[in-house]
Image (cartoon, rainbow, N blue to C red; front, side, top):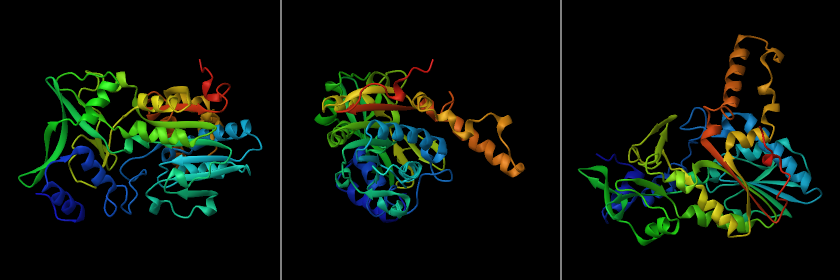
Length: 369
């Protein structure tokens, strides 16, 4: 049975009017203003929470991005630059970047609609905002986003014979369950416009907002770089009929992944890999050029991540005792997860686009081997 409670009551009331498209279900359980997963007081991100992001995994992540910030400021010397993290969560990344660079021409901003988790920002050298429209542009802009687009509400579809069906949520015998209906025109056009044809029985997870939102971000930039870090693929790999026959949607809770997307609404994260082709197209149709698209590990290596002290050879490290040694081992392991073949640095990808600024000579464009 569905338990009683604010979010469950909202779902019951909504389901009395008919089945709920899965995208609307995701919007409710993640972003309901009173009790959504991302709007509740408890922070879901962290080593002791539901999942961990790269900035919280290891300080070497912000160290490497800090190298790019300094490179950007150096190539825009003397100009006021806005350094912006969109979807900044608790502000960990933008706070670290602000603390690493004391350039008087740098202005640091964290953008997130869940501002309750950000805490005071003035003492950390950065300012918070609920939307990009609140951020002063300065003369040049460096825009970061880390796991922003995979947090967008998304639709689930499945091919049934010659037709595309949208997955919906219904209540059956007191519990949440799946239903299907003919996909609306918007979702049909999504695949037609990208010349993607799913095979019979193949599932896919998409959000038309990926492209439209990114277009807004690109339009904000007058002269600068956009660095998008996320889980995803270009369309040919994201919708591959064998590799991703059941889509990419997943639920996260307590550092564990599940495919039970309807369980414990509001108590687990729901996410899907993004179509980086949507972001490339949005950028290029709004005056931006694609400079880099590859794995996160490669991107961080080009930014000299291994010069951080956590990558120093073991024989050069001095420790005062066993407890410190064990802690250091864990810190070094977390740092390596960002660049080694079995870590998140291989699973995640980075898209860098430029608009009205230098298109050559960036560190991330260098060949490593």
